[in-house]
Length: 136
Figure 1: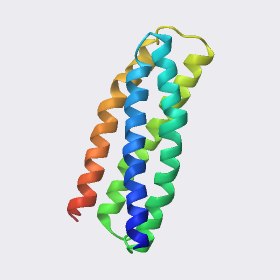
Figure 2: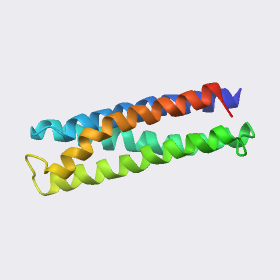
Figure 3: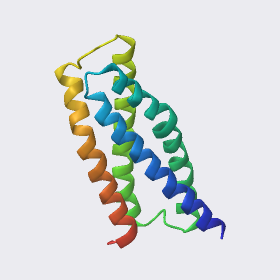
């Protein structure tokens, strides 16, 4: 029963984290300061706390289910690390843009925000497929 509650908390946290990442990716590429503030709030109030919970509950689930040696879990972790690193990059870029009062992101940060959405959604889709199908 405890396993199922931890799994529920993990899945809820993943959904909240992805919602925060989508908001960050969309808000960061817009020139309006109010959207940038929404993106920063999505980071502080949604994505960052949810990511912490994901990184706590995920390994707990893997230990409880004895999955640490499963190849599908190792493959999933690659995508989880990619999205986690992308979150850090988006968060730092949004913070820097807010600190420097940047109205329109330069080409490099704008490209980051444009690429963040498909990378986030594709990584999430692959991770979910690996967990459900467990192909190897």
